[in-house]
Length: 187
Image (cartoon, rainbow, N blue to C red):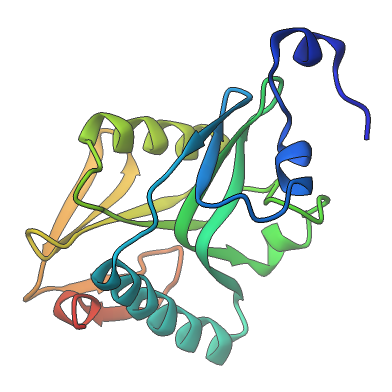
């Protein structure tokens, strides 16, 4: 692996170097620097699983692509590298066919799902949204367990709120997909 001289001088690392470290615990890489993250709680894991199961069932039935769960690493910037960890992602067959890296995703997922943790700030969430849309993510669902609602973003200024009595649609990213928001917050 070739490391850029500028990164060596500044103490920054690349996404490939982070991946080669193995399991160092929950973290993200932000502009070449490792940012530790707390492990998620029990309820958070349950909500991630609910989204994963609903999506995976639909995507597999219709042979639409891949669904991944568990802080999936996504490159949102290069030189210095930023690798964000997403709770759940859907990647269409078309996009997945363009994947080149065996490690973190070097393609933009079609859909990213972020389940808010108690310590998440909206400033941090907004920054992630900004990065996701900059690389071509088409839709982001931000699930808020406190309000039991899901915010669907197509852009920073295009947000819809779905409460627990609503059906959450897949829009044109997953045509025909719909699930009750309340089901996503079952434990």
